[in-house]
Amino acid sequence: MNLKLLTSISKSLLLARWKQTLVAAIGVTFSITMFITLLSFMSGLNDLLDGLIVNRTPHVRLYNEIQPSKKQPIDLNSEYKNHYNFVSSVKPKNELLQIQNSGAIMQMLKHDERVLGVAPKITAQVFYNVGNIDLTGVINGIDVEAENRLFLFKDYVTAGNYIDLKNTPNSIILGKGAAEKMLANIGDVIQVTTTKGERLQLKVVGYFQSGLQDIDKVQSYASMATTQKLLGESNAYVTDIQIKLKDILTAPKVAKELGKLFDLEAIDIQTANSQFETGSSVRSLISYAVGITLLIVAGFGIYNILNMMIYEKMDSIAILKATGFSGKDVQKIFIGIALTIGLFGGMLGLLFGFGLSQLIDQIPFNTAALPTVKTYPINYNPKFYLIGTIFSIVTTYFAGYFPSRKASKIDPVVIIRGK
Image (tube, rainbow, N blue to C red; front, side, top):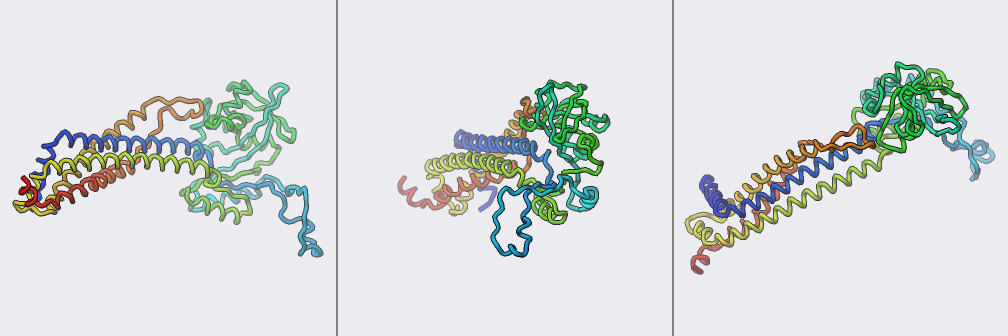
């Protein structure tokens, strides 16, 4: 049958019951709006929470782990080689935290096509001396420019200028929590002591705030040179090599490979932060489940309205079939009605969802735990809008398909005879 004629009939049936049609379209609009808003907000929240870790965590970290020797002297003795030897109170291996040949390793990594960047680091256990009280702390010696380039260091420096760490000798950027405990202001000089008893006075040039309060209470940053001076080590002293990859998903494979190649401990970001990935996956799953449920509920609304329309339009359907319309033609008419409702409601839903997301994106969100965040996080990923469009079409298609099958099987003779 002529498509133009079928479209005209579908339009007439839609307008004949415009109130019910409007209700069905509003249901689809509301579902798509909430689907887009919920996914955008939840995905933005995931990005925010993961960013607290991902932005500050290397994809692969190389370091020396202090572990007990796997083979004890008795195991090397030929007389006891094939025996079961039980040794208690095993002491760690007598080795340093320093990575040997760190310069050559970093130079090799910089030429690896998979590597985006490399940043050295020194981890130093210290005590902050506050009067007669010593507070436990950790100073991270960093290459300031590399740390900022790869791990957005300046975004977490809430007071002072991060580059002062490089330009000012014997300087330190204190964790916000540590600074509050010591009542240390920018420009003050504090004294720190290493575990070996070495002391050094450092000038406070800024505050660092990661958003993780327990870390900010103990962690501070100094330049590589200052940290090496504090520890009494040479300028070749490095305890960690931080690697950022072009593809984060390859981190487990690369970590395993580099650990064997350089005979170092290597940990990838997925292993180090597996709990965060689990939380993100669960939140995303809940968002999709709620959104799809809303769309299915809207689909049932369209199904009920079309069922009622078919029941009330039995005479019209019988006349259509009696005048030469086939069952497939009747089916196309009602599927066309359902798809029209779905497309119209879906497009409005996408617009309202985008508008509501933008509104949420402007709402102030200020918290001391997240210094870099000023408004509620929203992710405007086009994928969400594509998924919403597909689901609105698929849901409304099936909502119209089953009633249309019922309409296509109506026997016009039975209906007309009954009248």
